[in-house]
Length: 197
Image 1 (cartoon, one colour):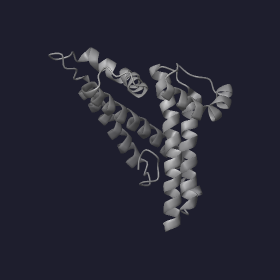
Image 2 (cartoon, rainbow, N blue to C red):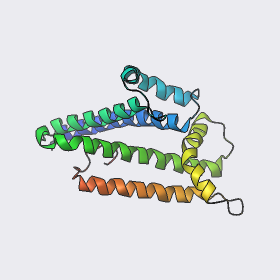
Image 3 (cartoon, rainbow, N blue to C red):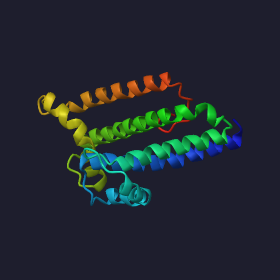
Image 4 (cartoon, rainbow, N blue to C red):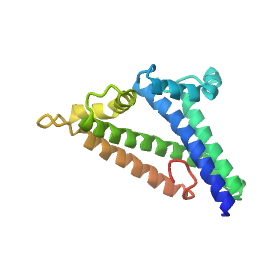
């Protein structure tokens, strides 16, 4: 891989990775029923609306999941992968069958990363600013509630200390390990898939 190909690959991964993050964040915020009028939610909606609006006309939601956003996330992941393969001179014909599987794994890994960092921020905020009304803090709490909620029901607070986050992190770790095992089984090329770099 030449220096120019490395730089171009980095730029593609950074730009497509940011957009993939925005699309998946919108999807997860919709699933969590987060505040649509939060300024950060509005920003995410504004940058993801141009491709999502036409897709929504032909792709309906299923069980409350925005399938247009799922498809857009897969397309962003797949397009970045194709561009990186072309830039680096990999033969597309050889890998075309695997690219969809790699894209799905990359999207799943990115979702796991979003939840990991959101949960980490939520735990830190619960210690340093538990009653913060900052739009970012509110959005993080709303995003994490569907993950923390089931564990709060299973594991009661001990002496006023909520330890449900520990079990949520363990469950997320299991999901991340499963994705990595599947990625190894699918012979994923290292450092080329967004979310699995």
